[in-house]
Image 1 (tube, helix red, strand yellow):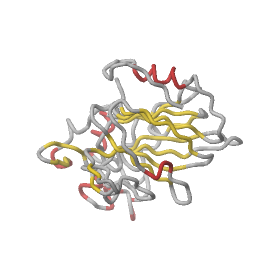
Image 2: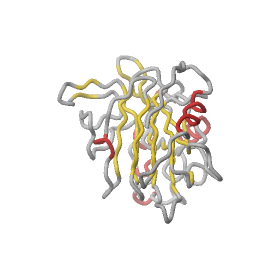
Image 3: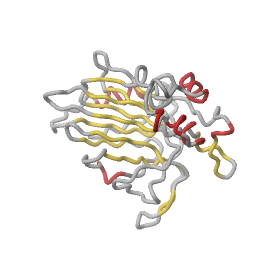
Length: 253
């Protein structure tokens, strides 16, 4: 299920090589194959959470060094989310902490979500009889690491969900999350202000009453293929019938 290539991480067309390589494999299991690639300069610790009633793959978390690739299958009709955790430190029993995306200090999240801010990949997958899949990259919980999701080999009408720019560099000071003086995350307006108006809850839980904030407009201008706020559906939700998808953390431009 893996493909080993001796190619520098700085290669501009690395994602094309990944896609070409992985199309050589034939998937026999029912469901959908997810290919995770760490193209970041540092290690990350992906977190995975299945939605209510759905299984959580790989116990919900693991370590990926720079350049690592991890491949796994999820069953038909699976839905859930993935995110990267940064600068984690765990002991031999898997207890510790992460600067961003932490799931209660656990290496294996096992049903726990990540603490925002974190860039989130969300998906709701179809079945063999109804194979339409939905997926997006969301900044509703803020941002920590650039990420993209695309079908392997392309596909008719299939889009790319991504935020491929480091928002930490241009994060407004009011939204910054710093560790030891370094910006490691950028909060969403909802996370920073925590009001119904900015979180699209209560009487604002409707696209007619909840409008994008100035910060959501900024996120959208920088990452037009990602959700910038809760009702940013028209330009951010992707649909596809592919059976394999590659999720690249720190995707090449």
